[in-house]
Length: 196
Image (cartoon, rainbow, N blue to C red; front, top):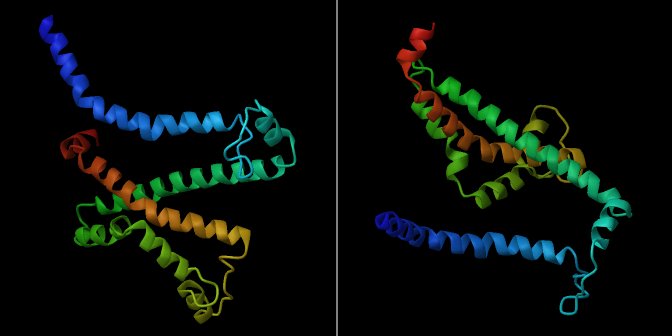
């Protein structure tokens, strides 16, 4: 009994740094943000803000800002769904192809397909910004060479959103590829053979 209490104290001592850092860097900012949402805190009331209750929430739901809020919320949900499902489907599809034991070049393809994950996100995003440039971007230049008019990636809302999703899928599929490939390779081949 005494040994269990001592082991429990030791376990709490080991997880204490993680709990403290989670509390400081995750829980406290969330609590503070929720508190601020019930005040009139803004650029004009940085030091002298006061509690206003649920007025801010009522303004969002019923005021003119709702014309902006709900479309942005809808786009955010669509973006999250397309990015998550798309990255998973691309990763799973490629994992199934690369898991084929008859594909001799699978290791080369794995090395190439992991490049988006290996690159720092900032560099990759800057490269995509150049590729999607309307005047001198590589994608529009390629389209011009094929006789297709350029796409307004940066000025048209639909194409800007499409470009964002393309970039996010490119950045996200390598992780899902590795997860799915690891799962597929952990399946016992004898189990697969006995099921057929």
